[in-house]
Length: 220
Ligand SMILES: C[S@@+](CC[C@H](N)C(=O)[O-])C[C@H]1O[C@@H](n2cnc3c(N)ncnc32)[C@H](O)[C@@H]1O
Image (cartoon, rainbow, N blue to C red; front, side):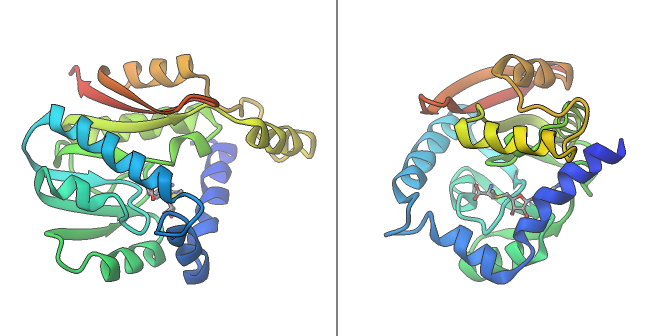
């Protein structure tokens, strides 16, 4: 992996290493939080997509964060794996989900610490759109397709006004890599295809800027 791609990943990871930051993130989606309504929408849409995949033995939430959506995976799978680069996020996930049939794994999405075909479905939400390096995104897609034997659900978010400004600023300051740019929808699907994934279903989370969940099936 290039140094710039590695930096992109490290910069995003550092936002979630302090307990206070982790709790602040979690609470935004809780009752009374700024994103409570969006949380309910995500739950409903995720359930629809999981129903299409049917019954599963093992489902993985990567990055699981504080595990706010893992209970939905557990409605369809006998066991769940909550994986994240931050042990702090996983610590809170464990406290918040004491009765889940779950294992917890500290790992990075670019090199998932599990064998090939270890799970039936891998769910990846609110993550890939933070990775602006195409090389790194492609690597993460390939890792997800390697570890899942059947399905991958990934969220795509088009860059909104604020992310574009942030990215431009980083560019001006020389902090973004040469190829760094938020992924277009076309790029996102092309990267999934080249990792051996084909679209089985999609659902819209928000219209502008576009946010969606995609259920992919493995092609190889
Ligand atoms: C925005 S949160 C999303 C968490 C969860 N999917 C949700 O929707 O609530 C992003 C998570 O990605 C994790 N993360 C960041 N970089 C990572 C990486 N390279 N590999 C694995 N996890 C990573 C962070 O620790 C954080 O928990």
